[in-house]
Amino acid sequence: MIYSERLRNIREEINISQYEISQFLNLNKRVYGQYEREYTIMPLKHLVKVCDYFNVSLDYIFGFTDNKSYENRKDGIDNTLLSLRLKEFRKENKLTQTKLGNILNTTKTVICGYEKSRYVIASPFLYTICKKYNISADYLLGKVDSPKYLN
Image (cartoon, rainbow, N blue to C red; front, side):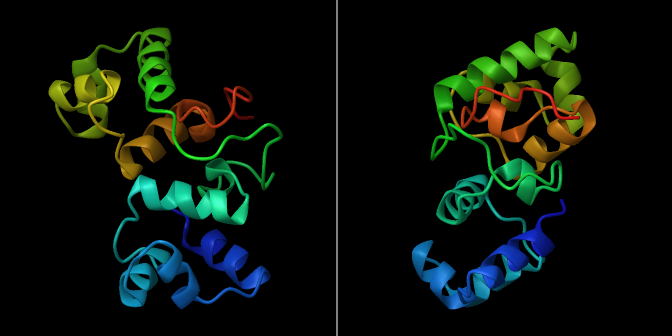
């Protein structure tokens, strides 16, 4: 995934330290530093919380767009919309749960769990889907209603 540079730049633009962000996320500074350098993949719940804090879109942090934010953006993740939109996306692209699982190197059971709102999609899986199919991460997460697809 490619989010470290934009995450660091946005943090530095508003003159916030890694320590301050780590406190906001209730993490050790070292852990946040590893996330920011992508030594460790940042869980989606932390990525979304940081995006909400900085008022930027996940699509921007992932490098899918140069627009920092969307109008009518909602904070957090809407698990119900995520499950519905993921299933809708899968069907639009004629993907079975098994086939999507194979693309993401996971199982049908995991995809089923995402579609039934049992748990939130993993950051690398969301990134892979959005990158491969040019769909907005913010849209899938229910943070925006448009754009659905990115240019």
